Image (cartoon, rainbow, N blue to C red):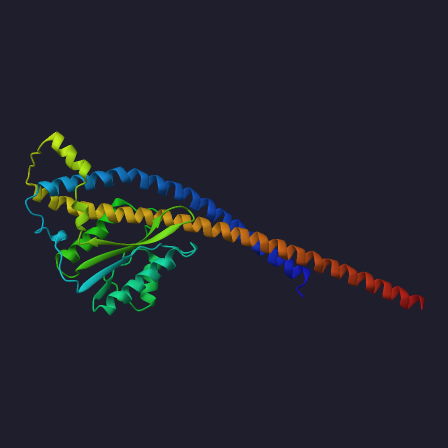
Length: 296
């Protein structure tokens, strides 16, 4: 049985740990609110971008010649797992890497060569440890991604796809639902899906009321410039979703850790009180035994 001093030392250490987990929970909560605000702020821009692309594609004679829309037989695919730069976020990073490696095995079984382009230091370190060769990597901004970071990633992916180095690009990230729920999402970003350029019935009716537009330059040229911007926007959206998911997962993990630490402190305190009572009882027995020996 542990001594009172040993139990007191353990309680002190766990108490200090609980202070850290509570502080990390508060920091994650504040960052989560900011991440949610950024997601809500970019949604109108992303929706407007889709409308503009659909309208331009509708006015185009042909869009098949645009590099980012060309579809070909998939011989090489790129997987882009979006993880965090730090741990202590529950299963946030593990579930992304688990889904990415499952996708890797699935593509390998189909005879497709896979190239890795991870985002986030945790994903980079894990893939390197697993001896995977990395085509490119980005990190250091998982807590607060900027549009410039999304541009750098999109530029590299567009370059690989346009050159024919890869025939498919898959993004794997956590979609934020709430602080308790994050869904792993697998999204094909290149070639750009055809449904992106489809027009809804509401938009067609609106166009008939407004009339024909005059495009300058030609719709095909405008669309060629819009497609890379759309790719940047989708990657930026994924980075923001991942950032919010990471903070939500960390906040939940730290809250659970604080709760577990509190329960352990209560258990150890009870055990410490029992040990102290046992010591007191033993001392009383020794005093009584000594007194009996003297009077005998």
